[in-house]
Structures are given as C-alpha cells and as structure tokens.
Image (cartoon, rainbow over all chains, first blue to last red):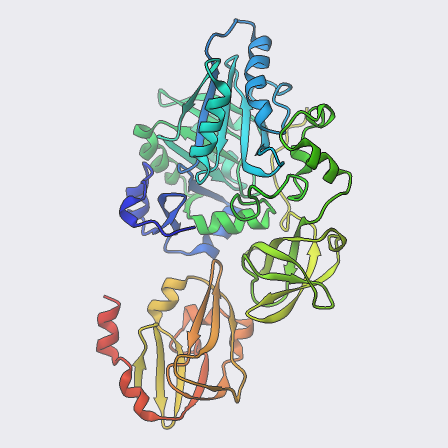
Length: 385
Length: 121
C-alpha cells in the first residue's frame, strides 16, 4: 500500500483512546490505526486465543441496503432486495433466514474478486446488512448503489464504531454487556439495545475464535470501548495481532490473498459459491468459475508450514527440484504454533496435503510443506438446531 | 572499552580489535517481538554497510548491517533457539555477532552514546 501522509489519514472515533493507551499508530486502508499496544503482537495474539481481544475495525465498511417501497410482505420484500445484490455476488442471499449472515464475494465479469464481504438478512423486511473491506469500500458502495438504482437505498454506517470482540471469553463478556446478544449463533446478527442506544451485533469475526462484531453510533463508541475494557478478560488488540490471528485461521486478506485476478475457486473459497447460484450459473464470471470448479485450474491457494525464517508476501514457492511453481501472498510467524506459516498460490499438481515444497527467502531455499488450513482450528460457536 | 552506535540503531562494543554487534534497546522496542534471527557465517568478510544479519518480528524482516569493515569471528548461536533474547537483553545476551575490525578509524565515523541518544529523542 502506498504511504499516505499522516495528516491525510482518517481517524476512527477511538483514535484518542489508541494514542492514550500507547498504541503504535500506522496507516491502514486510509486510516490511522494501532498496529500494536505496548505489550506487543505476540502477547496480544495469545491473549485473544485464551481470553478476549477487542479490535477497533471502524475503518471497515458497514452499510444497510433498504428497499425504497416495501410491499409489506416480508418474503416478497426480501426477494426484491436479494434480487438487487445477487447479480454482483456468488452467494445465495434469497434463502437467508432473518438474522442470518453469509460470507460472499463481489466478482467482476471475469470472475475475479473485487472484494470479500458479509451480506446479512435483517429482521426488518427488505433490508440487508452489508459489510465490506476498508480499502475497497468506496468502489464497492458505488457498485452496490448503482445496482440499487431507484429501487433501494444504500446507507453507509461507517461513520460510527465497529468493534470486534474475539476469543473464548467473548461470549461471557457479551453476556454481561448485552445478554440477548450472547444467544446469537455463529453467523447470526441482530439489533439490540445497549444503555438506550441501538447497536447491531453479529456473531462473527476474523480470528478463528468465537466472538462478536458490534456496530455502534459514533457518539457512544468511546463509552462502549471503555465499558468493554473494564472487564479484566478484555484487552485491546492492534492490527498486527488481527493479521497473525487471521493468518493462523487460514482466512484470506483482500489485496494480498485476493484481488481482481483471483477467482473463488483459485482462492479455495468454493464454499462461497452457493449451490443455487452455481446451478443457475447466474453470477459474474460464472463460465470461468464453473470450469475451474470442474478442474480447469492454473493455480490454487494452499497453506504452507515453513521451516526457518518467515516467508513474506512475494516470496517465491519452488517444488522439490527447485522449479518455481508459485508465490506467497501472506506469510509470517504464527504465535500459537511458534513456527512460520504462509498462504500462497501454486500450480494445481502441488496442492495435495503433505507435498514437500520450498520457499525462497533472501535467495535461500527453505523447506515448506502443504498443510491443511486453518493452521489453528476454528472455534466458532455453532448452535445445535 | 568503547561502545559506538550507527544511525540504524546498532551498537558495536569494541574489545581490543574485535567488535561485538547487536541492536539497541530502542531498536528492539521498535521492532517488537523478535521471532527469528538469521546470523552471518563465521569467516564471512563484510564491508561497512553490508547486510550482516536479519531479524524477523511477527510482522516484518529488518536487515542488520556491518557497522565496520571486517571478518565475522563468532556468532551468538543461542539466538537460533531463543530469538527473544534480543528483546529481553539486547545489549547483553542478545548480542548477534563479533567482527574482527579491519580499520579502526571507521569507528570514528560512528555515533558515540550522546550522539545516539540525541537521535532517539
């Protein structure tokens, strides 16, 4: 990412809190955000895996897409709003239940990924809750608003605070803050009242742990941040720990593991191409994506466990006989494993679990092995139905 | 015994004709948790400013340069298994390598403790 002069960076409502807490501020997606607090990334990372970490992700792009003239028939209104967004993405939105969230991909006509995002069906008929990435939000919002035309209105909600509370203790912290929100299942969301203020809470996250994401109005965001941190199980987390946690969870990062050339199948996100959409072949780039699904692939994302120094983004991946076969797109040190791990793209014949490969770090080859992702098992809370 | 500093936040502690090189407490603080240290080969000849070692934090890799021209005579192999020593004791147990100094006059071009302190104000 190009360096942006500090004075041009946007601040989230919690900027002063980050500075006061000793956060080391860096530019990210056009915002000034803490990469770490004084205890450091390793300590923060482990705290989230064992307790609960609080992340300011207000730079992201939450929004609501609402039908302009709802009929009053909940299912018909949902079908109408789903029909507006579905042509842009590969997910089945029509069949979401009220309060259900789906991870999906915004695609270009070549089947490349414009963004990865969350689309959720609100309990308010004819409304979707849509959360996109910081670096892509202007383009995404313009694209969705254009698709909405005069049938629906996209209302941005990125002027408030979006907080992620993540870790095995997150549910207990939430139970004390907003008891009803603690009853959400994984990938469900709802509107709740916190001290007379409406907040939107999702049971979702980007760490592989159970947790919540809370959208609150700007004027209440500092109060919410402070109240969460009163709980001794909660500590603030920077972007560094967010990145090492999501890497261990095997979750792709847009702009690194995903871009406009990468298809869902190449990115090993085939699950995000919903069955109904697949059978109808009615999403952008369907021809390429369905052919790739049938095996016509030139590259695929894999997880690598690496011996020695971390292989960072851009490091070349070689086969056992030193032939270049791919490139690392995210790599670093996994604090939970005490080892270097990476995500990268390789040609399909090298994707089998257990394949011995190499990565080139500073001109030297180091052993690497294709391993399953997530590197650290997900611990999402799945409600038994 | 003198200790000199580079603007890249390395120290060289001079003992006779040998210099012990590591990074300053300020540098380890800036880098954060060190998870890997790549050390030079003993016997390697380096010119002042050549890349001598690499320290990796969770997020990024940073080069360590030879503060003076010379030959590597010893490396701190403890760092292979305990890279965190660079954080916990950067000026002591977290030293990185010893270099036989070819030209002692190069030391005069480096910062003294006061000069380095000014740099990190």
